[in-house]
Length: 394
Image (cartoon, rainbow, N blue to C red; front, side, top):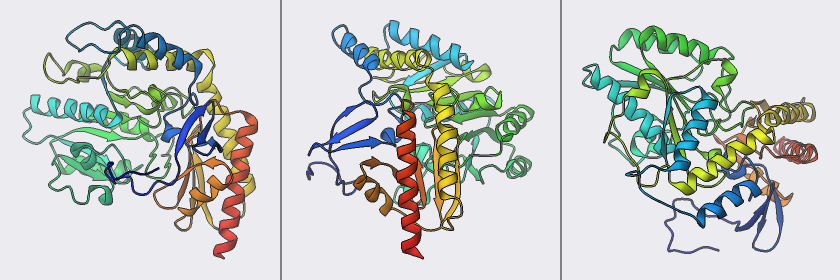
C-alpha cells in the first residue's frame, strides 16, 4: 500500500502491517513476523497487551482529553508513580521523545539565562540522536540528518562519546556551559555502551562545575536495559532525564523528569503542551508501569539480554565480518565490517523484523515479553544470516 497523499520522508516502504498480538505482527497477506525491533523500542510489552488495551478502552469510554487548564487525575497518578520509581522530583509530560528533549534543553537555557549567560551552552556527543525538531536535531550528532535545515540553533558543543577528558578540555575553554546531554547507551548511533563508570564520572564533573546532567533515556528507559532507567545501573541521580517510546507501549507520550534546581526552573507559563499528559496517554502509561512491576519484566529484560548476547557471541565467534557484539539488557547491536542494509529484507524472509542503524550495526530491540524459545529463534536466525552474509562477501 502506498499513496502520494503522504510526504515521502520515510522513503519506500515495502511491508504493510495490519495486526499485532503479543510478540508478533501480521502483514496484509496474513504472514506472521516475530517483532525483534518493537516499533524501535516502543512496544516493550508486545502488541495489544491486555492491560494496556483494557486501560485504553475504559478511558475511551470515560474522558479522552481535557486541557492542562484543569487537574487531570491520571496525570497526577502517573507523575507520582514516575517520581517514586525514578527518584526525581517532578515531571513535565509531552507527546514524544523529541518534545521531552526540547523541554530538557529549555530547562538548561533557563538556568543559563538566570545565571546571566548570553549564550548558555550544552555539551552533546558525536553520533548522538535526540530528535528531529530544530533544537534536538542540532543536538543530534548526525550531519546527514541535519543537511538542508540550516541555520541550526547555536548553543551546543560536541565531543566524542565516552570521553570524559574531552569534556574536561571543553570546560577549560568555555565558561558558559550549563549542561551535558547524553544517552546512557547510544541507540541510533549503533548501540554504543560506554565504560561502566562513565555516568558516574559525568555526575562528578557536573557536580564540580555546577552543570545539569541531562540523560536522554528515550530508548533506554522503561526497563529495556534491565533497570527501569539505565542511570540506575550506575547508582546516580541525574538532574534531568527524558523518556518516551516504551512509556506508552504505542500510545504517544513523553516525559521530562527533573530533580534539584532543575525541578524549580519552570514556572507558570514557561512551558506547555496541548496534548501532553492527557487522560488517555496517562492511563496507558500507568498500565505499562504497573505491568512492568507485576510481571517482573525489568528483571526479565536483564536476563534475556544476557542470554541473547551469550548466544550471539557463541554462534558468531570467529566470524571475521563481526567487529563487535554489544548491548545492555534487551538493547543489542552487532557491528559488521561493512554496510549491511540487505539483512533487514533477508530477516523478513525468515519471518523476523529487525533493523540496521549507523549503516553497519544490526540492531535488536525485542519486546521484554520475549520467551526463551523466541530468544533462541532470534539468535539463530540473526546468526545464520550474518554467517551467510560473511561467506558471500568473502
